[in-house]
Image (cartoon, rainbow, N blue to C red; front, top):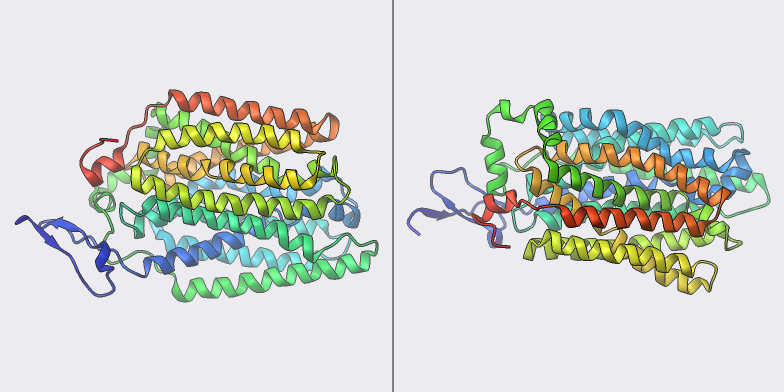
Length: 451
């Protein structure tokens, strides 16, 4: 014990203070880390609540603006198009200029896009909707990549998975609000004047929320704590600048076979739920007459279930660090859940609600597990680079999956569309079985890999 000192200080969480070598920089956990996480969660909520703002009421939007379902789906898919070319530059920006710059730009674009959509209420102004959605989509380039980065910069080694899961849970809450708010604000009304008034109310509400959120970020969000929260972060700070080169990091990732396998799993687990959420109204319209109302209920049911699953997942990962075992169990249950949901469609709606709970718990908890596993396998590569690379591939797959899923529902049958999704999840499960997990962050923090 002579070689170690205990660190305490102002605004330091004394229960989380660590024993450190005397010759290293101090490692502190600051209580305001939870405020930073809360502010980020608000930004993620706002970004994601705009993503499916129009697709969840696609039947009403199609009638009001006189556009086909494919065009309405592009209000969600446009965010994927923006993300593809800009994700890696966004990762470089976050690495070079820090979290505060990234979250301010993200919140700013989200706010601007919401105000643009306020001018889209006339029936011949659907193109303004697409412009507003495109501007709002820029915020996702910065916000989506931030959960693992913020967790690493502000949280200790025993909290990082929980913090990352809570950050991702913010995105899920945003999705839930994005399903619920439009469906109750813009009901299916035979009068176009009533629909116009309701769309104006929806757009104004979102714009005012975005403005308040942007002001909160400007006033209170901080870039990083005065001292690092963990050995892994301390090591990254002390790394020479040459080792942090973004292009070099990307090239190294392309030679990391376990990472590439996990990217494939992440891509499938990301693209399938994305396609499902975008086309949920379209899917339910095949079986139930009031599709927009049911989509406004089933979407939040899935997401709220996923929130609980994500938080529990992060807690278990921090406690046991059994990434592969937990991932395999969750992935297997996800395959079973989509099969059961498919066979419930067309039956009593309360059975569909129950199956939606299972879908949410198992579909949406695969993402935080996969995110943490990727960070373990790629340490000490910047979190933004490895996650940004993963999301680029995942967003490209989401565009293809959404278009294909929508086509199969319209031209064939939702039954076969869902079974194809289940088949893809089975492929992800088989790939996952073959991946060899290398616990690099764990070894740095705890000195061994006895897991």
